[in-house]
Each structure stands twice: as C-alpha cells, then as structure tokens.
Image (cartoon, rainbow over all chains, first blue to last red; front, side, top):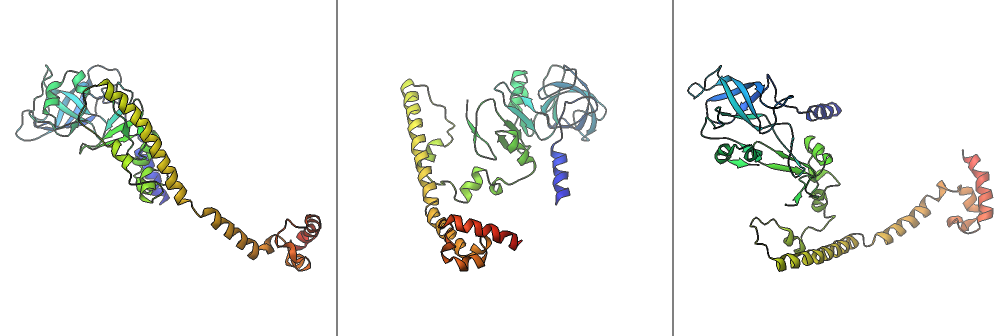
Length: 137
Length: 168
C-alpha cells in the first residue's frame, strides 16, 4: 500500500513544462495527421505554451488526409499540460498536449476540432478555431 | 466575475485564486488551493476525506436541505443592471447569510445535545470502576470516602505518595 501511494505521488507531482523541440503532440482536427513533433516554437525562448504557434513535423498520419507523414506544418497549441495564467489571476491546465494544424496565415487546415479549447485563442486571433470547437474551456 | 466552488472542498473560489483543470471530456475541475488539487491528483474521494463539505453533508454533520441554499443556485441568465435590484440583492445576501448561520448553529446545537450529560455519566462511571488506577485499593479500604479525591486532601496525598513507590 505504501509503495503504491508513493508511486502515485511521484507521477502526479510531475512538473509540466513548455512545448519545445522534439515534443510530441496530439493532433485534434481532421486534417489527416495523428501525431506531430514540434521542431520549433515561434516566440518564446524556452518553448511554446497554450495558445502559441509552433512549426512541427508530421510523424503519423491517416492514409487519406490533407497532410502526409514527413510534412512540415504550422500548428496552434490548443491544450497544454503546463498551466497558463489567466488575466484574472487563476490558472488553467489541460490533460495533454494537443495542436491544431494551420497554414501560414493562421487558418486551420481541418474542418473540425475535437475536445475542449481555451478561450485564450480569442486574444491570439484564432477565432476560426474557436468557431469549430465543440467546447470552450 | 463569478464565484466558483472548489470541486474538492466546496469552498468558494474568489477571483485570482486556484487552478482550473480541464479534462479531455470537457469536464472542468476547479480547486481553491493546492491542498485540494494535490488531494485530487492522489485520486482521493472527497466524500471520504473528513474535512471536506462533501463528507460533512454526507455524514449529517452539516445541514443538507435548507431553503437558504436555494438562493445560491447557479443562474446562467445575465440580469440587466438595475441599481435598485443590486442594492436589494446586497441587503438580502447579508440577511440570508445571517439566517443560514443561525440555522447551522441550531443544527450543531441539536447534534451536540446531550453530550454534557453523557460525559458526566461516563466520568462518574470511570471514577467508580477504575479508581484503582489512581489510588491503591488498600488505601481505599482504609478511607472509604476516598472515591471522590477532593475530600480530605492532605491525608490522602501523604498516603498515596507512600503507596506509589510500593506499587511500582
């Protein structure tokens, strides 16, 4: 019992950090990619956070999609395990790291977005993603 | 601005405090402080953790049903600002709080009723049964009125000091 408790503690007291080079992210739209690896976080010396854009390389893709494996794409981080401070002082964090693929202009490649998204995207002018989202946290 | 309730302990979360955790099924968990958050991460059930409101309500330590709780229900329709309405609401909040506190105090008093009498009974019984732990039975036989040690203090103390080394 004691060992299981300590195991639990050890795992849940993980410090979540930024999204940087080599970070694997889940893709939550229907653009065709499944997993994507970050190769550059635009803006931010330490890495990308919730709401930032990244450049990523597609590692895993569905057979017939708009992107294929090995493509270099832009993405917007819509869920991050690292907490982000809100302007009212509270903090928000999600369960996993997820990204929505966009083109250079910031418009999403896919037509649907799955899972909750934060409303930090509104400030970052990713309104299109917000309209496609099924739940805004 | 909205005052939320902590998912774990049910206290109010004021603006600027706490962490919101959004799960992938879009369920939002709000925590008032890291104590609650860490307990949640340990997968503790708030209904089993003694200091939470959930436990207290479940085990009838606090009031569960009361008409004053109806006023605090979540309303999602924003009201048009009306100065009179706002003023009256503020006055009403104060009054409702007072009423609720009074009712909770009454509930607590009801719960604790009969505690003093019970304690007294238990104390007298313990005194009767385990007086041998305080004074040696030999001493008690010599002075039968020693069941209540307040009587005849001087003589009793001397004798008990004699007896204690004997006991050990």
